[in-house]
Length: 275
Image (cartoon, rainbow, N blue to C red; front, side, top):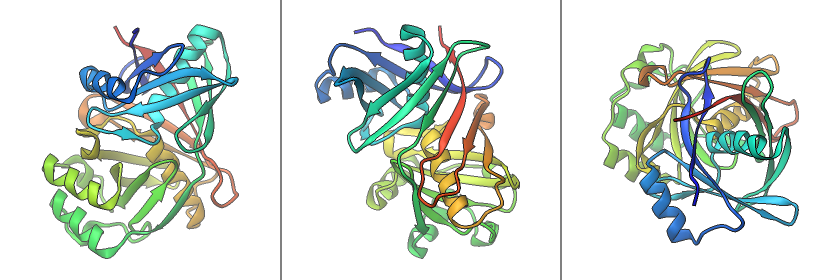
């Protein structure tokens, strides 16, 4: 089994979120995929095999299987472009299908079309529990973007704060975070700061997957894009997200947001091969 290591959403040849990518003639059994993901140790590893003209894909974090992972999809798109040439590739997930594109010209890049998006106001009890977990007061929240549970293939709690300093000091207990996310069916909790209508800073806690933090979270970027559109945020057709800086892994994610409510969001970025 060949395991490729590719950092997705890198910035100028550095940073990004490392993902494992395994491409084979058929998918290994789930126990093997889970064991490989745990051994690789990245927040996710994508496994892909050809099936009926598409690619059957499953994603595993070190502790669990996840329904969709944006950065691992970007890494997979880059790997498919390297192996097969530039193009668009159909991906069949556990629930539904998406596409990913990959290019090699002017640096390795990829773009995914997310699953459909949807969002709803976050329950008050969940917000209170999350704020207590991170040691942040309710008054720190940005009233322009109320807390929400948003989806684009996976569920995320979105918490936007008035000041970026709320993100800079992110600390939490991993076991308590995993328990909270498990009860709420969340994949990550995204702490956000709107630096402008189309520029966001983000940190994503991923205790549910056995990882404290993701340097770049493409699924959460798509979910955020859909939520901003559906709530009337003046995004101007797209957003850029800066993530991973606090971890020394600067990452840049770009989300193109169509007007139709619930529509797929396009998330793109650079990728780099890791030694």
